[in-house]
Structure formats: structure tokens, C-alpha cells
Image (tube, rainbow, N blue to C red; front, side, top):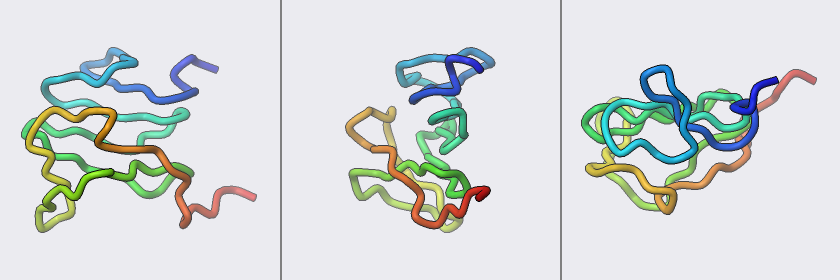
Length: 91
């Protein structure tokens, strides 16, 4: 197992970070699962297929296809990681 299989990690340009990158495109992982992508124009694409999801604490605007418009660099206060109520898993 890798250290990045546990907790909250950010991946940008092939490198892993424990702090949120303040520029550009990066991926948000929690316990080894991709849960969101921060796009170049401070939009956030959230994924809902894993055991955890990223829940926003603020009411950000959404584009027609579902990305949240953050409009600035993401901060830890903007979101929390919660269990996905729709995740069935492999039981």
C-alpha cells in the first residue's frame, strides 16, 4: 500500500501534495479514491461513484453540465469529505 491510499491528497502534474495547490489543474483523492478535479478556471468537477464524496460547505454556482464554479483557489473550509449514501460497494 502507498501512503496516498490513506487520507486526503492532491495530485498535480504527477506529484502528490498534502496541501491544496493554488494554481492550475489538480485531482483530489481521499483514501485512494478520486473524488474531484479542480479545473483550470477554478471550476470543480465532483465524482459520486466511490465510497466517499466531496460535499461543498458553500453554495457555489453551477454550470449547465454540473461543475461547481468556485471562482478562486479552493480552501479546506470550502468542503468536507462524507460517506456516499448511494455507494453500494462490493459486499
